[in-house]
Length: 53
Image (cartoon, rainbow, N blue to C red; front, side, top):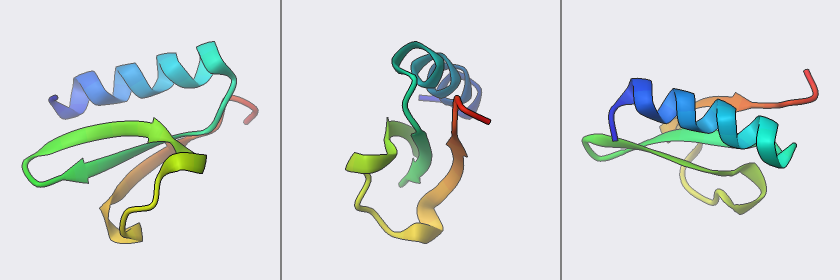
């Protein structure tokens, strides 16, 4: 997924679920997961979306 698509998806997911969402880079693409489920390396995190901020 492209960075733009991942950013839009992460924000939409965070506000829909009202949960913190982590956007991370995986090889040559990007992924989105609830922050509580992310167990990858900290250096792969691009942004954390918090709907409560």
